[in-house]
Length: 217
Ligand code: PRT
Ligand code: MG
Image 1 (cartoon, helix red, strand yellow):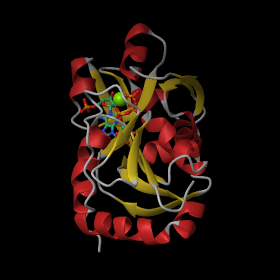
Image 2: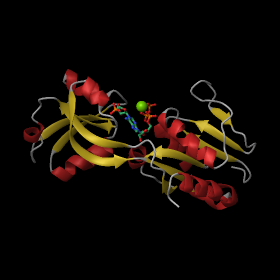
Image 3: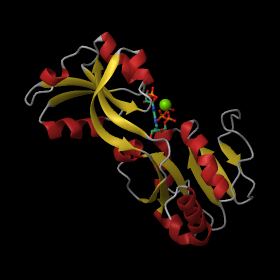
Image 4: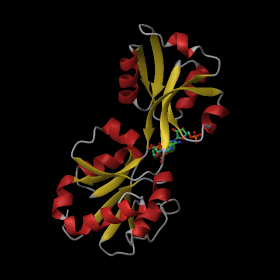
């Protein structure tokens, strides 16, 4: 971690797309598109600023250990990660969605989720799911998955799923319906605490530009 260079951790896809205008507002333009390039380190128009392209759920880890100075991660990822060693100055209001409980259409969720009952829940978010059902007094067997949660209730792996919903199109296409809203999700700026001190002169103007572009200053 040298004081004069900056490394920013981003994931491909919706976060990268929605971060581009924020980077532009801070005068930062990637020289390559990570969707097309296989490179994991991408330069920018600024010689001292580079991007590292990582899995969405790995962004907090890179920032926590200082391998990236800051990054952008969904609140879903941050809740599961725990946020250790991370300063979270801004809700960027990008990549918005909702964490929901969903079941097969026609499944009697109201009956199945009575306090004292036992429910099988498939999810990529075991901590969020466990806390939600503990709050309702429902016993759950959590089945950890890494993707395509929507399949689990269709093939009898689980009664319910806890997953992110944005348009609702994926649930609909798979004959599922959302039955409970857990929490609204958007993406946050996460900054390494040591980097914020050592590289304050480099990082603070970017935080300010992001805040302004996100309508929060
Ligand atoms: O895809 P990969 O396994 O590499 O990682 P990831 O799914 O964690 O990354 P990515 O890029 O898909 O998502 C990054 C972040 O975007 C997440 O951490 C969320 O904070 C946010 N986000 C916003 C979403 C969605 N909207 C979203 N709709 N992440 C995932 N989805 C998925 C959802 O899981 C479901 O499968 O999209 C599907 C539902 O979308 P609709 O529009 O059909 O409702
Ligand atoms: Mg995804």
